[in-house]
Amino acid sequence: MNSRERLNKALEHKETDRVPIDFGGASVSLIHQASHDRLARFLNIENLQDKIHNLMTMCVYVDDRIKKRFGSDVELIQQGKPDSWNLEIDKMTKKWTDDWGCEYKKPEGVMYYEWDHQPLVSAETIKDIDNFNWPDPRDPGRYRGIKEKVVDIFKNTDKAILVNSAYGIWEQTFSLRSIDRALMDLAANQKFAKYLAERLFEWLLEYYDLMLSPIGKYVHIVKMDDDLGFRNGPIMSPDIYRSIYKPIHKKIVEFIKSRTDAKIFIHSDGSIYDFIPDFIDIGIDVINPVEVTARNMGSKLLKKEFGQDISFWGGGCDNTILEKGTPEQVREEVKRRISDFSSDGGFVFGSIHCIQPFVPPENIVALFDSALEFG
Image 1 (tube, one colour):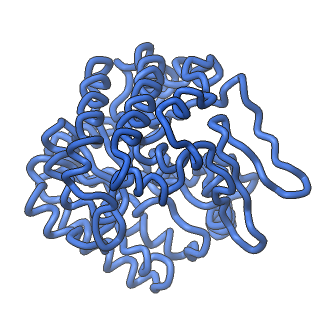
Image 2: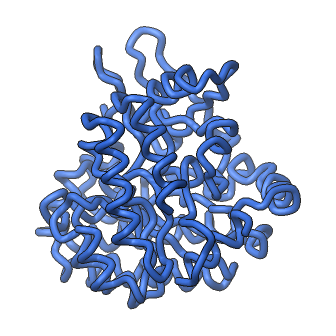
């Protein structure tokens, strides 16, 4: 059974020869640059492919030799750099600005960038949203070479193809607005919140249209985003989600399904138990990263409650064990999660979000070698 067959069957909840593995196939299963470098040295891989995928998180695309070593079944398709924007990191302050006008800084001694300015943080009215300098979703740089790359992967490899999202509606709201102002809007200014969500939805539909129209028949998974959970519970009440964001998510799902037969994958961190029935209701096929140590997110509970109706992607190892445990503890954790999640299909093994900078390389090896063994 090849990678494409394996993943498609797993997401159809059918028997496979082994559990599919994702290491670097989704943008949320990449690895921090520091861990990637140490892993390559540990595996005696030279001339490392080390291209940054997300400058804010400092995560990189996984070197093809590493993906092959660990049996990854998925290839990532990512939008390109818009022609209208260039990355310019200030030599003095080390700050930079993305094409949406969000500014980032990297404090001394910190391994990630963080927001320094968010362009809608002071917005008060609908007019402020309309007057925002919206980037062009149709900028040709975003899509240049995508079809050629997808066709090459489809014809010359057996990998499943995952198309990344541009952003999540709620995530982009707090990226532009700040998390505290965005949350205050949900409590006290829902008219503003709904209007901003609708404008972001219109932009995102143009992205999915231009991305999927030429390649829809080749792709197997299309990713959506929206982080709805803290570790101990939802970011917002389910009622607010159902009022503002669920209808938009439903429209996104319907639009994607009009362009492709691919499965639809949503990345949503933390404790999202309360939202899973809503995801199932609107036709989402897969949830990720399955943060198994968050409230009500245990692997046995999720499989029992929702395993017939949705697939799980990630959930492979408690992050604390992955970072601070021994390889044997990682191995036992992987064995447990695969046992919980993999019966009757519906599971793609991966780390819970991107692998962070202080994870020992021997634990990364244990993570994926154990998945190959027990899966």
